[in-house]
Amino acid sequence: MADSRRFNFRKKDIEAIELPEDGKQQERYYDTKTRGLFLLVTAAGAKTFYVRRKVKGKSELYMLGRFPELTVEQARAKASGFHSALTDGKNLIEARRADRAELSLGELFEIYLEQHLKKSRKTWKVLQQNFVRDYGHWKNHKLSAITRADVERLHAVIGQRRGRYAANRAIDLLRAMYNKGIRWNLHKGDNPAVGISEFTEQPRDRVLQPSEVKRFFKALDEEQDANFKDFVALCLYTGQRKSNVPSMRWRDIDMKGRLWNIPGERMKNGQALTLALSPAELEILNRRHKHANGEYVFPGEGRTGHFVEPKRAWARLLKRADIEDLHIHDLRRSLASFMANTGADVSMIKSALNHKDVKTTLSVYVRTARSAELSARQKAHDLIKKLADEPKRKR
Image (cartoon, rainbow, N blue to C red; front, side, top):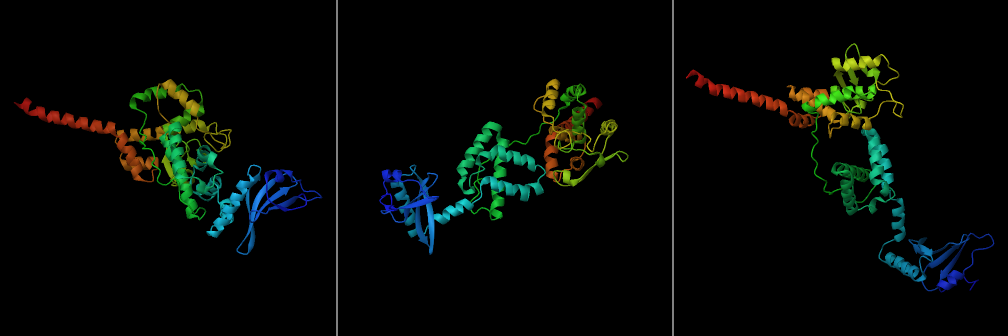
């Protein structure tokens, strides 16, 4: 049996096969019972079942599995299944090749990142972090292996752990990736994120309330960190996004003209903004300019070279001010609120906040103009009462 390369496969006989000698790296042994089935034995001791058959005039090999994890009976069954599939017009070898050639989710994201996000989204680094956090455990999954049921379950888990907003944004990212993959002919299957019922979201309308302003500024005045103190004040006064204020550059500020020119590439909507600076804003900038060091108004020692969002300092500020559930980004909406409540119209607020679409401004304006509306209604009430009382006084 030791000299024969063809025999009726049995477990004990396969176990008895000696490793290749005389410098050979591998040796083949053929089963006499099942067509095309053979065992490849390597010098390293691996014993692997294969089935061989000519497909379209070409000899093709299809790996079945490793012995002894795959038994002789299982190898014969898989070999017979391979032949049956070919008879039915299904080439398992081509299917396996297609599977190997198929992109993984991680590979698709890298292409999506380079060809789309970096070109169109200033927040691409945040989205990259979100992908790692939400889909890092799927990065090696083939695109066709991820099902709608998988996405539904993950959506529910993220919603439970981090909230409905985070869950919906995760689904939005996955859906966009697959859509691009399909459009770029990188994926031939369906988009598993299409048809997912997202959580209902309530638009955030939190603003700094008039009753909180005094406590807020008292706590801010007590702040020892001048960078943080000035950063917060400028976020509120200018109404600009928290990404624009810390990255403010001296070359974009015209002290004599009292203007802040923000280039379009630094704006979320891509539109440049020229902001007229108020006395309060100029006071902060003039004071900082006396000790300016470098290109940024708020220099930093980190990778960006400028100040970054101070989450811990913000939390301490709110605690001192006894204010809850207020985000730094809410300061932008707060400015819009105070502008609306002092009679500024929608177009003025749209210009100040550099909204690309008036609908965005209206969503803020309608929610935050309550005080102005109440004041106007109260004046109307007073007029009504005055007119109603006049006949009584005349009589």
